[in-house]
Length: 317
Image 1 (cartoon, one colour):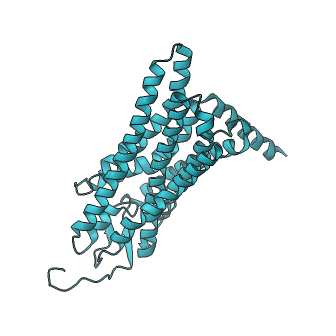
Image 2 (cartoon, rainbow, N blue to C red):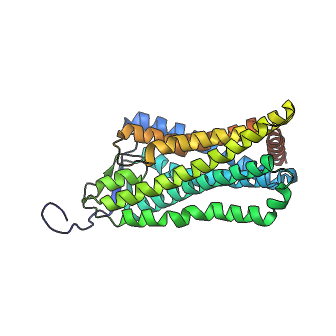
Image 3 (tube, rainbow, N blue to C red):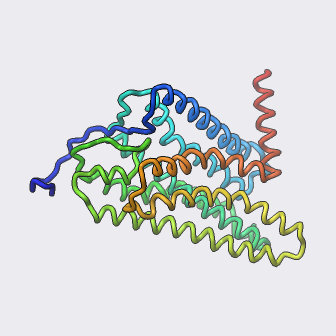
């Protein structure tokens, strides 16, 4: 119920995404900067996905999971950046009600899938390092195929509930979102009636998902580190740590920034901080991931060089 005692009704057909308010010249500068970032992100992750697909030496569970993760990154970044780029050149900066919640659903579903994929990759490294003799028997084609399907589908199933609940809130104006994407926290703040139940369900869902996946990864790597420390040779220790270092770097980048924002949406984060943190995990992290994985992995470097060589040959012919 609203202040007048009447049941509020939805009168909002679209939202305005403020993005990064600035002069037209700065908007063009932002457009150029993020266009380059988006292009590099797609190219880097596509290169890894193609390298895994084309190089038979990379047809192992670790690299198959990495290839899927890279493709997932391309989908994840594509849910927000194209619309953000369009808004830099637009004067209206509007997005329809349905379009807003569609973006919300896909962005957070892919983000949820990324969390699950990082867990699956940690589990794979645990088996490879802590149970090396049993690894081929446990990590069969059937198991890692099931894990790939699980990683892709879970986010889409789990995030239906928060999206439906928040979309059912009454929106009767204003319709201006001080963000570059349809983020659930400012969306809930725009509702004309404060629904504490929806806020509680949303924050509980985020807290359980993020702490659960993060603790799973920490436990996996705690066991990995204990096993590595017990290895007799320095060469074995170095090889084991090098296969885990890149994955741990991605975990820290991804979970570190997300936990700041979504475990406690009730905390009043300043709008500028919300945008910067969201920008970090939604744009910067997907850009960094190909660099992190390729720079620390000799097999991936060799496969990527083959991909780029074949592309150059194709262009020459």
